[in-house]
Amino acid sequence: MDIEQTTLIWIARVVFTVIAALIGYGVWRFMRRERVVIVPARKAYQPPTHIELPEKTIALAIMAKPGRVFDTLRLFKVMHELGFHYAENQVFEYFAPDSKYIAFSIINSRSPYKFSQNPQQMHPTNGLMAVMQLPVADGDHQVEYFHLLLSVLDELRTNLDAELCDVNRNPLKNHNLYEIQKDIELFEQTYTATLQHDYHTRSR
Image (cartoon, rainbow, N blue to C red; front, top):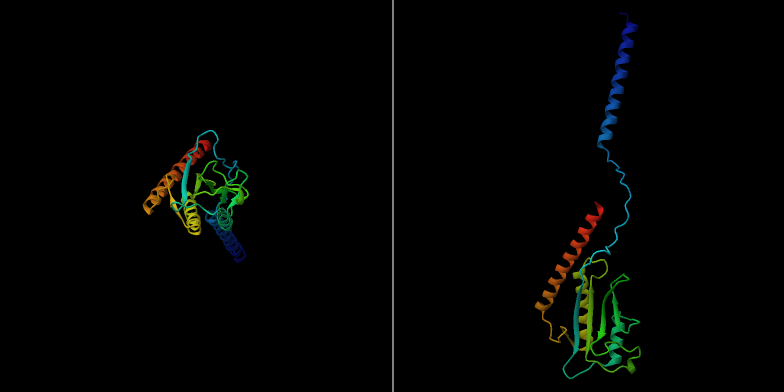
């Protein structure tokens, strides 16, 4: 075997070695890289209309001190300062922050349970009823909405020199509020479980 033939064989071996190395490197890169999995598009999940979703009403009262009534002009002024909106059905509504959803409403504790658009034409009342209809918005963070309710009612109570009570007009203590919060936590768990069960059933 002459020198020229030996050189060609050596060059061929080098070329094959380089090609094998490049192929191996390409396979390694493929195995290492993150896969892009194409999943068929699905329609956005819509809350079910064929099943009955849980609902719960939270009602608290702001009551004037015994023997007193709220000054109507003062009441309307405070409501507007706290961010309430006077609705067409003649109640005050409080919207969740940065949301189109009503967090809770304030109704008059006296029949017909409404507020006149003109406070000067309205008979004085000694009580306000705060009504929160659960679920608020999409059903998440219901306890936070309850805390929002308590925060706003505390300001309302302070500004009107009133008391926070239950629907029977009994003053509420911390342990009463804690019990309500636990009920709301249970409601949220039940509501979420109902939606998840429906979602998984419809996704099969």
